[in-house]
Length: 312
Image 1 (cartoon, helix red, strand yellow):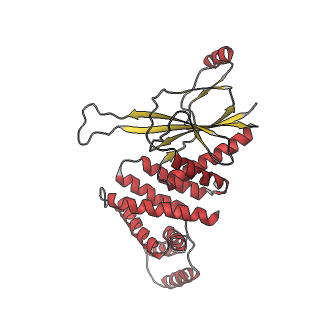
Image 2 (cartoon, one colour):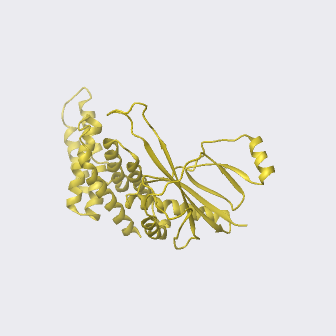
Image 3 (cartoon, helix red, strand yellow):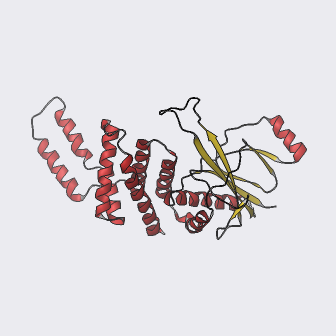
C-alpha cells in the first residue's frame, strides 16, 4: 500500500511536453507525472471593442506516488504546492493552487455504485491538493482537451530550487507569492497594479515608530492639552497625534525595501504606493496605471527573491 499526492493547479501559461503524461524530476520526491488541460470560456456572441475576451485557463495536474503513509504524502504535497507558488511568482508563470475545496457533491447512492462495481472511492475534482491511497480513488470532474504549448524544462529547474527550501518559507512570503500569481490572471490593469502593490505590502508588514518620533508626539500632545479648544477639536487632534505613534505601513515597506533592495527602489515604490493611495482613496488615476505595472512587478519579484535568500 502506498499513498499519492495530487495537486491540480491553474497556470496562466501553458507547459509544453513531448508526450503526456510528462515527468517532472524534483530532488527529494519520486517522479511526478504532469498532465495538462485547457478550458476556454467567456466568448461574446457579438464581439465588439468592449466585449469580454475569451478566458483561457490552463489546468495542470501533478501526481506523485510512492509515499508510505498519508502524513508523508500530505507533507510533501504541501511543500510542493508552496514551491510551485513561489516559482509561479518569481518565474512570472502565474500559478493558482486554489484551496483544495470540492465544488461538486455526489449522493451516497452514486458512491455506493462506484464502491461496489469498481472497488474505488469516488472523489470530486478540486483545485488544489488531494491525498489518497494509490489505485483506490476515482476522481470525477469536467472533461477538457489537452493542448501542448510551452517548455517543461524551466518549470523543472525552478521547482528543484523552490522545493529544496519549501519547508523554510514563512507565511508572509507565501502570501506575497500568491498575490503576484493572482496578478497574472487579472486582465484589468488597475486591479493588477493594486495586487502587485499589496504583494509588497504583505511581505513588508508594519514598522514601529522610532523612539524620537514617539517622544516628539508625546511633547506635542502635552502642548495641545494646554490649548483651550472645544467642540471635540482637541480630542480629534489628540487621536491624530496618537495614531502617529502606531506601527506604520509606509515605514514598514520603506524599511524592508531599503534593507533588501536599496534606497532607489524604496523611493520608486514609495511613488507607486502614492499612486495606489490616490486611486483607492480619491478615485484618481483610473485607467492610467498600465505603465506602472512592470515597475511594480519587478520590485515585488526581486523583493520576494531577496527575502527568501536572506531567510534561507
